[in-house]
Image (cartoon, rainbow, N blue to C red):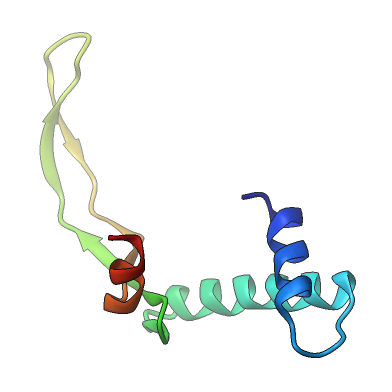
Length: 92
């Protein structure tokens, strides 16, 4: 589903009158809020949907596939999404 399709679906599902522009603004604001909270190290829970969190990966040793040389893969943080039970039940 593209962003435009998502906006159309949200406008159609709304019980109140909202424009596509207003819906797009809310969706953009949600993206910004989630990114800011994850950058600060906080978790975000969307009831019925799931939880966004930051996952930390430790430094580790890997191999260059072209040369076979051992390389160090730096530690990093990445976003992780865990689906809520209600969402998992709908999909199953």
